[in-house]
Length: 618
Ligand code: ADP
Image (cartoon, rainbow, N blue to C red):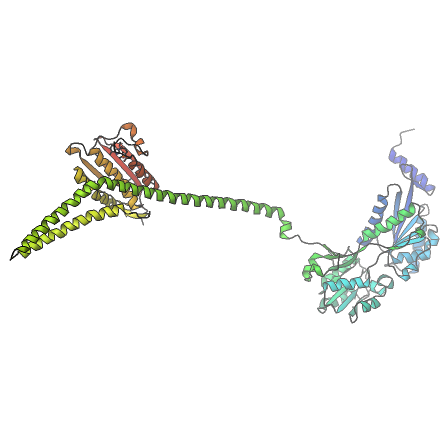
């Protein structure tokens, strides 16, 4: 004997078992059978979900192995005794060798069928009724060995949903054949009258779909359309309920209230919706209990938890309905995520990048401001230092200034005495007296010029940069120092450039820097023979964009290795020197974006250069 595979073994076991009216699962346990009878069509989404629910409930039970058969009786589309007769024959033949242990009956039409014909086909099988309304008329259909799980959308629930969507509702329009069926919507007329007296009702159930579509396209404002599943219309045209409702919703100018969650998203705004998958699970669970050994008649019928208020969020936007208006516990489907929900990460990343950027900008701005404040402070300090430097220079110059002043003052005294004596004369020569007075005035002017220059030199002015004429600026420094030059008998000369050289600078500071160089130059030549006691100031333009001031003397020059050191603070070779003149000059020049350096001229003596950027020409 060849090896028999596991699969073949199962098939053989099942074959023998089926011949013996029983099927045995692969592990040897007996396979139990459920037949689901439904009155419409398993291919429709609603019934297919019910079947899925039953199957899921059976799968959950791990101890009982179940085979589930399903039959769509399609009684809504195929009514009449002949069809029913042939159906009975068909089912008898089909299940002759398949024992059916439990029948799950879905829908009212199926219950009716079983009431009439079950005895002939499956006399012993208990029945679990699902998807039936809890009405006396349906209870009257139930067979003795049975139980039921009720599922029903009440007419008042449709009304509640309609009023949530249209708060000032005055009219409802009924669409779909089930409104005509007392076993589906019961006695809606009484229910509506009790819930909302005065409500106007337009009943279009049973009318031709074409006409229905026309009528619902022009409904008054305060109305809503209440639908039931629609399998056929007054003309006898058959539809799938979803397609029929979609066509209705397409033409409707008012909100469409629906009754099953299989319609949601394709038609209608929502409402109290039947949940077919739950209906299937609930009936399936009860069927499994019976397979487990409980008697169907011992399980009381109950209302399933299979209807829930559910609405299409997009439709709520269309009809401008606030979520708060919806019945308590309502669920919203198809909610479009807000921009924040949709782009949460993108937004968060962009926001954090911007935040970091803003932080960096703030830090940079703060640093810039601190730098600016530091610069302002540095300039003020420099200005103070320059002022002190000027006072020190003025102190050094005081002897020569006194000398300069004493000359005109002495001349004034002599002239005044002479004039007085002349006036004592009986016939004074008035024209000569006039000349003397003129001399007095001139000498006085000379003295006051000296004092004026000194005062303006010592004046403390706020630091300000303006465009100025470099030739004139250098000229003023040389003029100011002319008194001292006379005292030391040093020849001061300027050789201004023929070009109009303009720089942007703080005049007082720049003059201070130049003055320090000239004073040093005079110091350098003060003790030298006559022919070397000269200092020359030159101005020129270098490289097309630099203004140059050069102060040259005929002194002994600078020691070669000290040409940079001399600019350091407190470097001095003089017994009375402070060593800050050149360091102040360098600070001033560099603050103006320029350079200062010293060199020894080939012909002897030192030359100090200041270069500054030319002011932008207009
Ligand atoms: P101080 O004049 O008080 O010494 P400065 O900073 O003005 O301070 O000068 C520093 C030093 O630079 C001087 O002591 C001197 O040695 C040198 N120096 C400055 N100018 C000249 C110059 N024209 N010729 C030679 N040496 C100079």
